[in-house]
Image (cartoon, rainbow, N blue to C red):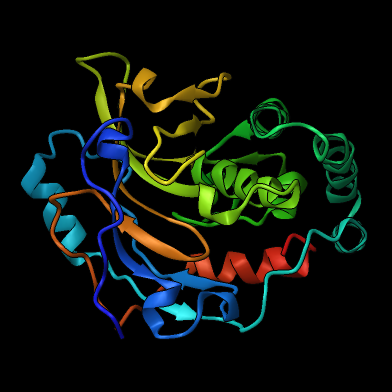
Amino acid sequence: MRQSSRVGSAVQPGGMWTQVVLRSADNQGLPTSTVSHASVALTRPPASTAGWDAHAWRSWLQHLLIAVLLLTAGAPQAWNADRMLAAAQKQGPRALAGARALHAALAPAQDLDEDGKLNAVNQFFNRRILFRDDSEVWGQVDYWASPLELLDKGEGDCEDFAIAKYFSLLAVGIPMQKLRLVYVRAQLGGPNGVVQAHMVLAYYAQPLAEPMILDNLITEVRPASRRPDLAPVFSFNGEGLWQGVGAQTAGDPSARLSRWRDVLTKARAEGFL
Ligand SMILES: [Ca+2]
């Protein structure tokens, strides 16, 4: 296994959003082309992190359980709308109505440029889904819903939005390499507001470019420089895990928890991969 490699640094234009690879699929010693997915098991910071300083965040990261596991071999499959609709039908009428609406949004988005795809997908979920905590929707402190589970409930929290947008953008042809789910520290309510753990989806037109941020908190897709309220902590996609420059290595191969792996499995069954 090769050592983790730096793919960027805290330089313009990506700034602190340009990060360091902790684990990636090609670090497993296999050709990237033979690897379709990796999974990341992680714990989540407490809902309220008010008063956390840099040391507290590093400490949390040190305790973060991370594992990158190869799930399957072979190239990722393209989006299969028929499989998505069939899976939704099994889930019930609400899921089917949601899947039909998503299909109606994604089909024309296939022909848009990447900015158009970002806006279409962001708008679809931000308009259709209501924010609600996992404890109220799922009766669990932290539950990672698949796209169809989110559409079935019509409600979800930040990572459910980010996950659904991630798989939907893959479905309309955005390369996985350009997308990352990003845990951030969000300063809610202005400079004196509360700092909370939050998740957004970032789109990188180029590896070192400033990303565009898709967030359930605001309607508009904005470049990271226009989101001074967000500070990235670490990010991941189906290929790897990245952590902010200067942060300590967060890694523990004895991960016990893999919501990401589970949601990848569900999304595959729903035709998204
Ligand atoms: Ca959730």
